[in-house]
Length: 249
Image (tube, rainbow, N blue to C red; front, side, top):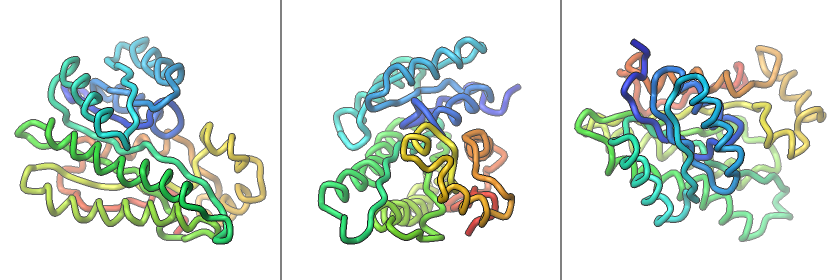
C-alpha cells in the first residue's frame, strides 16, 4: 500500500514549480490531488494530465487564495469530487525583490495578500474540511527568513510571518490531530526563477557557492520532503520549520 493511499491533498499554486512537483509526488504516493491555480489554467491542466496518465487521481481548481469566495469554492469542489481533506500544502506565493527606496504599498499588499492572508484563508478552509482523524498542513516558507538577503524586506517579512503562523497553528490545532509544519526551501530552479532572471545569474552562482551541497535545488528536492510531512512517517512532528536548502543558513 502506498504511503498516501486514500488521502486527499489540496496544493495551492500547483500549476508549476515547487507546487507542481509536490502535486505529482503526492499523487505518486497514492493521494487524490487537487491542483489549485490562480491564472495558469494550461499549466494546471498539464499537471493533472501527467498525474492521470500515470494512474493517479487529480483535478484542477481555479481560485485566488486571498479571495474568501474562491477559497470556499476550492474546498467545495474538493469535497464534491474526493470528499474530506487530509493534506493541505500552502504553496501559493509571490515575490518581488527591491531596495528599501523602491518599496511601495502595492508591492507590500500583493505579497502579503498571497503569502500570508492566502495561507490563513486556505488553512481556515482546510480545518473546516478535515475529518475526525485530523491531517497535515504543510506551509512553504523560505530560507530567506533565516538568511535575510538584501533587497528582500517585504518578501522576507512574509516568510517570517509563515514561520510564526506555523508555530502558532501547531499549538492551536494539535488538539484536533492536525499537524502544521513548514518547508523552507533555498533557491529552487523553477519557471519563476528563470523568468525572474535568477538562473544563470551571478546571484545563482553565489547561492550555489554558499550552499554546502554545492548547487541550487530542484522541485523534486522539496517534493520528497512534502511527502514525508504528509505521511505517517512524520506523525510526531508539528510546529517544525525544516530548512531544505542544501545546508544554507
